[in-house]
Length: 230
Image (cartoon, rainbow, N blue to C red; front, top):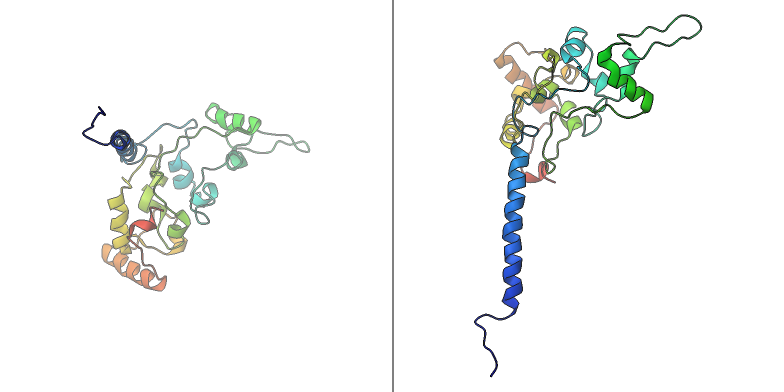
């Protein structure tokens, strides 16, 4: 007598596949949740120590060095690259002799700059710790914002006052959407983008200027999913 089954044989594969999807989906959701809520991604105040104690308060604040001197691609590409060692040694290169007198250099023998000197000698990059990190599924174009008058300070805070750089804004999706829906408070003349201390003078003046710049530069930020999730 042939055996009878309550369910057809193909349901075995279906149930196995369903189990894999449930378990895999749960694992993916857990990883996704941990990724988007980790200090490196979302939490305001993330403040890691760097291999070289670079003071933005000194370089960008006291010395008034423009952000684009070190972050040269910020107005040209989607990414704002970490400066190459060559940029550092432009000022801090070990002293060398040329035609008799020594070339001048700033703190060229400082122990704090040892990782820079080693990087220059070996060609290996300094192991900088990344602070601002959006999830992999988020697309952000620095040049598109900088060239329309959105200042570095909007997303990164007063970096020119930070001895140790930290994440000043939570950079969540809601935070981004608030700016896209109401960009006027964050717009300024393009030539003032890297002047982190710049101010329109008052809230009313900023809103009036933002409205004017928005019309002149045809700024219409989108809020649909495909803008940032590509």
